Length: 96
Image (cartoon, rainbow, N blue to C red; front, side, top):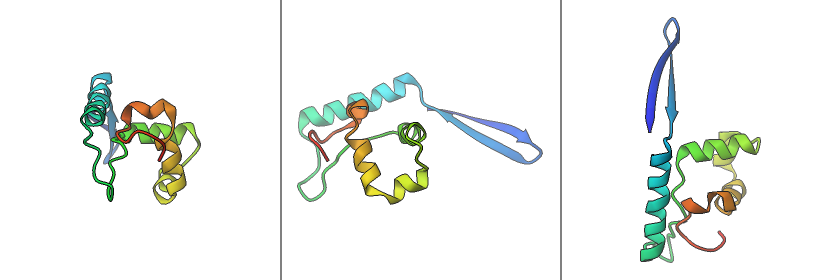
């Protein structure tokens, strides 16, 4: 991930983070490896996925959801994890 600090005005700094295609591909490949090796946690604590924050923010923006709503509402989180567009970041196969 690339981070840039930009001075917007006197005393105000803006931190801009951007994911590169390579870093997203790395996470997707890591999830694929975990699926293939069966390293999906235990029956008591399943590893459902590894979703970069950037993708969560993009999902929220695309669906008109605030990050606070996302964090407070398990239904929204489940909907995101079941989204076919984010399947590459899933570790546990099947619906959540």
